[in-house]
Amino acid sequence: MSQKNRTSIQIAKSYRKRYGVDWPCAIRELALLGVALNRDWVERLNRSLAGHHQARARRKAARKLNLITSESDQTFAYIAGYTENGVPFGVTWEECRRMPV
Image (tube, rainbow, N blue to C red; front, top):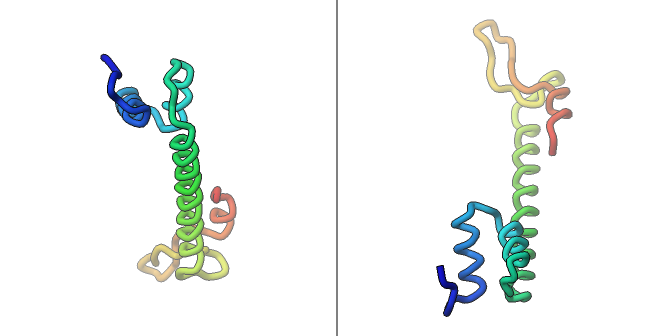
């Protein structure tokens, strides 16, 4: 397939889609193949990806905080429900502490 009249961004996008790789992998592999990519675009893309990862970590922490601040008691960090006899069940504080952030 000829890459004439295509920008480096278009090449990177099609490479990523064709081979099912993420952006950092596509950029590394194209660099190894000798494709010259626009440095400014690569830097902007990396900043964007870093921001995406930070936002995802914040959302994950917020979900965990929401889990903790919802209905709880001394035994359970999150009470999912109660049995017919009124015994609570859910995520214990110990299980919550072992969860990765």
